[in-house]
Image (cartoon, rainbow, N blue to C red):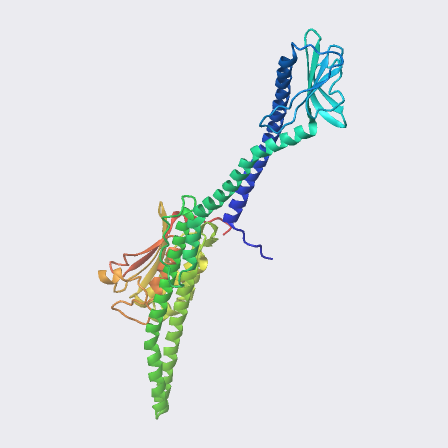
Amino acid sequence: MTHAAWSLRNRLIALLATLAFVGWGTSSVWLYRSAYQEASELFDAALIETAHAVFAIIAHEALAEDEHVELEAVDHAHAERLFYQVRNGRGALVALSPGAPNEPLADANAHGFTEQVADGARYRVYTLREPSGRAAIHVGQPLAEREQLARKMALRLLLPGVVLVVLLAAGVWIIVRRVTSPLIAFSTAIDARAPSDTGAVHVERLPAELLPVGQAVNRLLGRVESALMHERTLTADAAHELRTPLAALRAQAQVALRARRDDERNTALRELIGGVDRATHLVETVLMLARLDAREVDRSALPAVALDRLVANVVDEVQAATAVRELRVEVDVPPLALRADAEALRVALRNLCENASQHAATRFRIEARADSDAVVIAVRDDGPGMTPAEQERAFDRFYRGSAGGAGTGLGLALVKRAAEMHAGDVRIGAGLDGRGVGVELVLPRGVAMPKTKGD
């Protein structure tokens, strides 16, 4: 079961926009409650101010017990409606504002703020009494209208916040798209590349957090380019090297067809079989080198390999070739365990021994020693040796040198690749008896360890 891919850009936009909306919603609730409370306080202040204003008008008027007047409506710009009632010293309603209820807005002995139901409506009422008791003033406001006006004022204050959060969401969308555009461009550039294009990708526009990713991609492309180069070179060189044995096979087959005597035919067939063997050996060597080129090892997880046992097995494998030439094989390898790829190390040692068995005059020696920072495994012979020019090209693929021979020219290339797999090196050293050549395989000390008794 595969999981749907998620978008970093869309997730950032959603999270930031959600955060903005949550912040706006929280602040809006607080602002609405504060604005509503403030509006209520303003309305109460208006009730108090209105009561004092009306009181200033009627303070010096003598109101008879049976006198009843209606005050003129006050023209103002605000939408709130305030109603006034004036009581005389005996508690009778003697003055009303237009639209005021007929029922008293407050009790006769009320003082300050109260809430009262009059003519079926609930009012918020402020009562101001004249100190001498000659008059009392009730200023009321319908609670329904008061709450409606307070809500309108609070919502009017929230409107700019709505516009702001919409603009903020749009800004988040634009900023996230601009910030992530280098990453999108980087992935698009990689996706648009041709399979053969392994050049480095431009990482200059990537942010610092993504720069390691771009550099890792470029390192990967470099490794891919190196692998492709090895593959192309190996394929081209192998095709070139196979031409000669294939041409020889064809020639020997033609000789066998034209032969008139059995001995001529048998000789041609033997040569044909030898050519097939050489071509097979070349193909096997090429395939082995290709496998080593493609293999990557984790050196920290390599198993322990008993070097002395591995060398003994390799000597047994090349015993037939040394016996034919009556060569003496000397082994000087201490009981040392290596953390190594056993197959790659065996291939390297076998090729070194095969090269030595082809070029040695009387003997070759396999030796190993542990230095302070490396382990050196060497195969030395007493053959004709190499010129300085040949030593420079000794590890080139398909290079055979002036001596030629029946080899494929890949033996030392295999040794070099095995050394590279272990982060080691290979070099040309001294031979035996002041002549010949020695090939030294150098492995870092970190992959070597003493051999235990149980090994």
